[in-house]
Image (cartoon, rainbow, N blue to C red; front, side, top):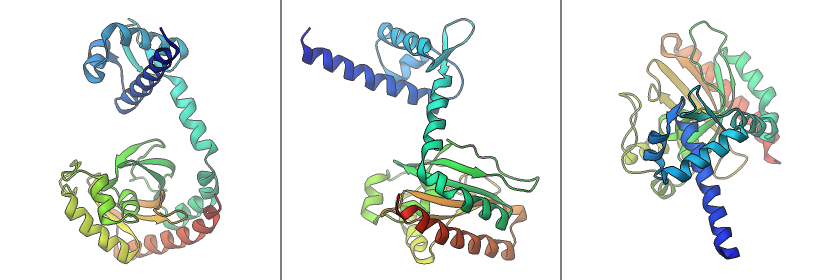
Amino acid sequence: MSAAETGGSQVKSAVRTVELLEYFAHRPGMHSLSSVQEAVGYPKSSLYMLLRTLADLGWVETDGTGTRYGIGVRALLVGTSYVDGDEVVAAARPTLDRLSDDTTETIHLARLDGTDVVYLATRQSQHYLRPFTRVGRRLPAHSTSLGKALLATYSDDQVRAMLPPALAQLTEHTLTDREQLIEELHTVREQGYAVDREENTLGLRCFGLAVPYRTPARDAISCSVPVARLTPAHEQVIKDALFDARDRLTPATRRL
C-alpha cells in the first residue's frame, strides 16, 4: 500500500470515528451493532473493529453483554473541557449570575452550530415550576428564541441557504415554513429580541437576544419562563434585564 493510500485510509477512519461519536451523541442509550450499522452504513466487520477500539479507549461504552454500544465517558471529559476553556463562557458568568438574580427565571447562553443551537451555560430558575436544560443540549435554531435571535443576524438569503424549506415541528406552535420564519426574523431585527412562543416546549415562553461581538453573531442569551407565571409586568422585567445583560456582555466579549 502506498503512502497516499495509507493516508487516505487514515482520513477515512478519522471521518468514521467522528461520525460514530456524533451518532451516539444524538442518540442517548445503548445500541446494537446492527442498528448502528444500519444507520451509518459501514461494513459490519470494520464497524465492529472501530467500535471495539473506541471502547478500549473509553470513547464508547458497552453493556454487560458486550454487544450494545453507547457514548463513553471520554466524550464527556472533552465536552466539559470545551466549556471550561471557552473565553466567552468565562466572561459571561457574572452577567448570567446577575441576569438570573434580576429575573428569577432560567437563563441560557448558547452558540449557533450549523442549524442548531448548543447550550453552553445555564442558570436554573429560583421557582419550583421551572424548565430544565442541560449544558450541551442541542436544539433546532428555528424553534428557539436563542436560534431566532442568531438567525436574524444573517441576511434572508443566507438563512434560505442555511435552512431547508420545510422545518422540523417540535410542537403545534413551531414555525415549519422557512419563509414564515424569515418574516418573523424581520420583526426580530426591528425589536432587537426574539420570542419562542411554546415552539420548542409546550407551556414555556422564551426571550432571546444575540450578543453582537461578532457579525453575524455566534452566541445569544435567553430567559425561559412558564406561561402560567408570565404576566405583562414580569415580561417587561425580563426584556429590560436581557437588554441590560447584552449591553454589559458585548464589550466584555468583543475583544475575544
